[in-house]
Length: 281
Image 1: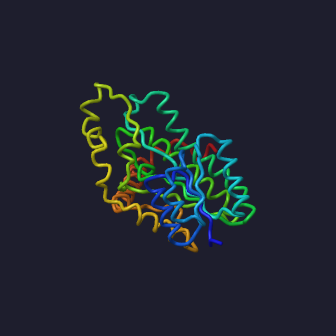
Image 2 (image 1 turned 90 degrees about the vertical axis):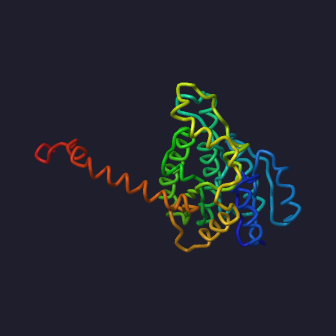
Image 3 (image 1 turned 120 degrees about the vertical axis):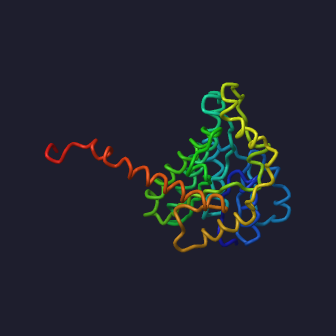
């Protein structure tokens, strides 16, 4: 029997696929989900005893609960959840349609929520577990032309922060994973692009050009090494609340945090002045 059972959503490609391969090669068991589990047939052939592939649309809460409950009954445990299913939406805030915005939130935010809710009864009963919501450097800072994507990742990070405090008494750990640019098709075939508005051509033109998919597989991040890093975090006795992945993320995040600290300090007097004076409390 494998040492641990990992449940990885969105495992058909990208970081999810790389992590599944790394975990399987380490000897652990993987329950890999994808909208089309047939995309995992090659892995199933290579690891017939330790890979369970399941069709799953993470926006279908009932289906998520049913699949996870069945997996928990079959494997008798779920040690790690990697809530990875998601995609990018390119477009200015004014450009995205209602349907595009709702679909982005349904997959990236609600899909993670349903996945976490589904595994928690098993993890609470075990009195152990580790949840890795896959966020992004885009959950730390924001850039033009991806506002709705950022909204989902900032929402995911806030939800995961609360979750970490709620489940710690049950022996469950939470690590928010914040990758920078990795060599996947996030900026390629999996990216949804809103219809551009000409009013934003000058403002968003360079960003649109940089996100046209032509650089989808030239990014500096190595998905295999990212998978190995996540395994090391799960192995750790005292894992971090957040894990930045890639040099771009590791270098940019501290700069963004410092900018906020500096700005908060510059405007502190105005902030404090919004309270009742001490003699009026």
